[in-house]
Image (tube, rainbow, N blue to C red; front, side, top):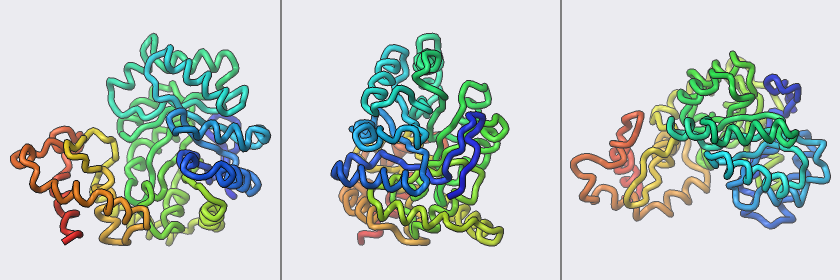
Length: 338
């Protein structure tokens, strides 16, 4: 396992971090076995959030007795002071800990949300108060708009930033990672499989592993998945492999979707998933989870072409900050069923 200094915190964190978001979907015993196996094999960064169903409770129930062995990161998606403070205090109870190593202001994608969180009675004030009280050690921010995150972290208010980085979403390389490096911040990459679309898993993991990040968060739910992720990081990435991976990322990232979720489809098409997986599906094929997504979305995708209000001007495209041809890509996806 590779370890590195986590920004200016003084902690040395494992390159592979444990993403606990999906643990509520498996039996508690399995979740506990998976978490403990991860700790036993050198993973020392645990990531969760108040909004991940009962993920925090699972951590408290299964590994709180080993609290000194891991760096614990959680999140609040509240924007006002009172709600954020209440949620942080609840997270401490749920995870059976006296201190949260990293509290992140979660899922900040709009300028208006950032302003709300940072204003006088915003969530950031609650995080600062909890830090002053010794209940939070460091404060971070997460989001899906890398260019906005780069701007926000440049103001020096955060110790860490969490962002997408995978073969189909390499966009953090342009501005965000260089700015975080310049600011001396902890850099955490999430969704190395882009939510279960990219295969093979080893290649997917090795792309963010080849980049300038401290931790790669992988959402693991079984001992076998931990083993698979650990195996992908056994060897360092050499120059030739890095160049190959970066070339593939340019191809798979050609859709240009950041998953900011500004678009909202009136008939329920999950547009970012289709945008991001569009090139993956053609080039690499999909993991079973990705194929399952397309089966679940089949009727909605097929109905996109016939939705009358979007015939002249697609409603989703009006909302996209990157002006992407979303309707075209969705309708191309419909051809897979024919």
